[in-house]
Length: 166
Image 1 (cartoon, rainbow, N blue to C red):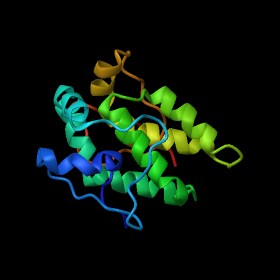
Image 2 (cartoon, helix red, strand yellow):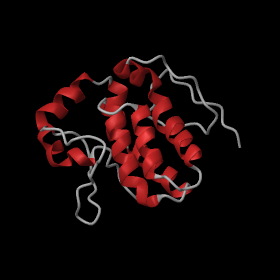
Image 3 (tube, one colour):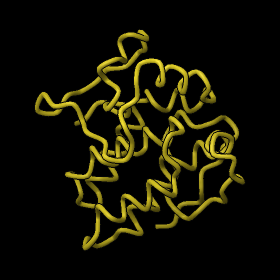
């Protein structure tokens, strides 16, 4: 089981901010993120301070890491955990738009089956619960719910989960 590594590409300076984060190193390697350049301590701190509180919490929520792990395992793409984990963290941090993340993910998953399902689950479990906060930082209209199972805790107080279909 993975323990939250949402901002693993920033893990070398997380302790400088004394944030309550348990970082997991996989095979003693810092997770790489091909989507954005690594941020400096100052850049990360500035971005983090400007985030709405629900996104600050989501960056460090154990449920976030568990949802990413579950999505990857359920869709038989455990090798994509690092990529998804870093991409979701970058979206939460405001440095990568959800659309750009999904486009990058499609490229990485090229040739795999179930890409639409994977994107739907990421959108519903990881982005929809924070739709209002994400809409603020990306200046978007709040997204409409899509059909998928309800997300776990740590969601925004007024966010309602999409109606699950099984």
